[in-house]
Length: 236
Image (cartoon, rainbow, N blue to C red; front, side, top):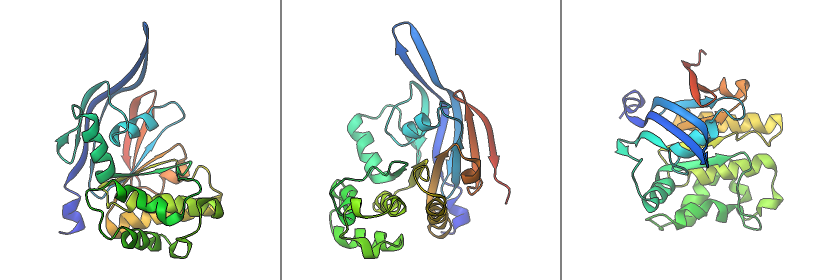
């Protein structure tokens, strides 16, 4: 199947998603009637200032949280009413996460960090071999047995990317992945993600407040006060 045909497949369809938090009679509206679609192979930035709702939206799309109301379909499956264990299965099998703070296990080797998602997978065959190949693909084949406190910030984020890739997910969510890096390392991480999208066709959703980072993506969905204010294709 060609990449152009794969693009026709809808991975994500959100319709009128709302997220509210209640504290007694006080209601805080975080997301308000969010609707959009993302197709396989897209590289999308969800952009907005602090408090705009972008991280909350990513958590809902990545099965880490639930919307208060609205419909969410992932690969054609209605997600809203799934049980917690069903969401946990999808989270491990279908999506990968790259966070600003890396979220790596301390005092654990690079290889063991990347192997972790495979230990919860339905298939546990060739775990070491799979993890090694993914680490080699992000340029860390020489760091397999290093502990995470022995490598640089840029290398830690490469480990996080490898961990996100190891189960061959349908979508990778990256939440401010360059936020804790120097400019050179940040550029390298963005390039790795660009290559994943270009060469493998990985669907990427990039949460950021930085216009420079967003300019490297192919589409920008802008949020403000929980509302979509813009949904545009990035001109190259």
